[in-house]
Length: 475
Ligand SMILES: *Cc1c(COP(=O)(O)O)cnc(C)c1O
Image (cartoon, rainbow, N blue to C red; front, side, top):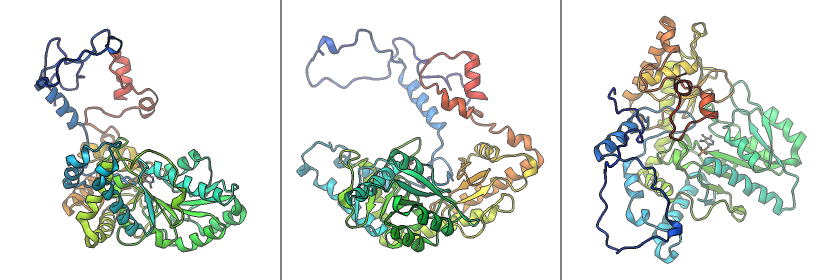
């Protein structure tokens, strides 16, 4: 894309007097805003003709990488296909034009969807009640921990201020516990990547009466199924604490097994991951929280109404379209796809924990460490080949983590394409490492300085000096 207009801001394309719109005929008569509400100067809006506007935004959208443009193997994020049918249903005017303040009698259909979705989630998770207020997974974690805190306090037990969290946990787990005012106690993993029962036993003996809950992800962040949940639940319940299940990655368990049956008391589900809402860049999401019978009285007030309603709508449409029968195929297919990629690539990439994985797995960078090519380099090179990078440098258990989650929807050809590109990059690392180390070569912007971009984001229109521009964008 080499034309002169490309890459400019809409403000730079502006010419005084150009117009790209026409207002509909005024059906309401004239109305003059009170002087106090009127701006003194005209808003500094760009003025462009329609075609320039259309091209500008179409070109910008082409810079975006999404599930609809290519394979997106980000681990722990479940970037899966979002059937267009769900979009159509969520956008039906009956749902889209609802107002949260309209009389409940006029919104019975919409409320019925919430109840029916609750029943579906109860059936899928083995828990008894759900609240739909949380806006995302992390918000769900906070809500769930507040349920647990409220429960302990209701019994007059205010000593329980500690939460046990595995060292492999998603970063939001300790963050949510801290926001909830709880103290984090880390339990170690064994060499095979699972929670260490010995270490847990030690913690429970030492800290028992001060433990509020244990938070777990299963399959864990290495994509491994924690096989000792019943023992873990016995230990935790034995000391009076509750079991919290981080259900952000419910994908491989769907219709196969249920957290409620394993001994979990409270959990959240990421509807925007497992139940197909397009997400990224921070939203939109929904992190409904489910609880065992009796705990529903402890739901806190975390937001008004029913959270992001359109996300609930998509989730319900997705569940209905799969049905009781096909929902069972999600987990096994996601697991098959992940294992297929893992086995196909483990000759070139280091697999620190071998064996069957669930929906995702983690490499510790390239196997051949002599090339100096890092996981960051591999991720950047993938962009040149038209693939979104996997999750990198997470989990923190390995130095060069590269975490892949293909999801259940991808075709064999897509998986094979990714595998061959990953092999190709491993070859390049051996034969011309500099090509990989200086990647990406084909994206509009090369490597940004992550720290500078995070600490000094330039998100408003201002004329940057040439030096500044070089620093921010092209390091
Ligand atoms: C994505 C994820 C979260 C956080 O969910 P958000 O909706 O991004 O807040 C928590 N735990 C795990 C395991 C996740 O993968």
